[in-house]
Image 1 (cartoon, helix red, strand yellow):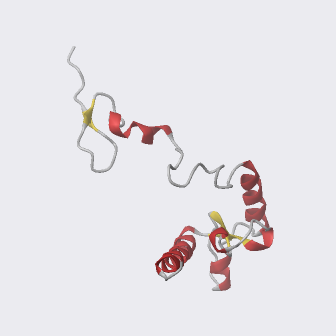
Image 2 (spheres, rainbow, N blue to C red):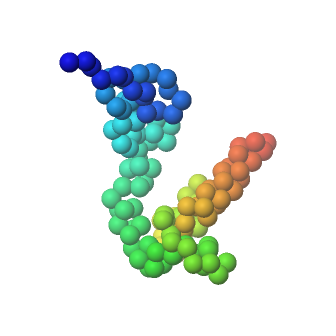
Length: 127
């Protein structure tokens, strides 16, 4: 019986062919789900363990699952994530008053602004 033709690796841009659908040896880690980020540490090491999971559920319930920045703009949008109003990198805490439900587009925009501020702090003399 003839063997099945090899298929491309599922990793974007990889041209390797594999015998079974999936990832090549070089990209096999991607198929096993969440991995430790070698630069930032695991979610638990960054403070997002089981306590955060419970707190996140509490905040999403408190905010009725609605994006708070969108509500301030009088738009009703589902909040997918919980965000620190003042980021932890800028001195914010995990206090419930510093947390809000937020949608992905608002979260991406807010994170981009916070990242730009962080880069500016690094680039400034003595920063």
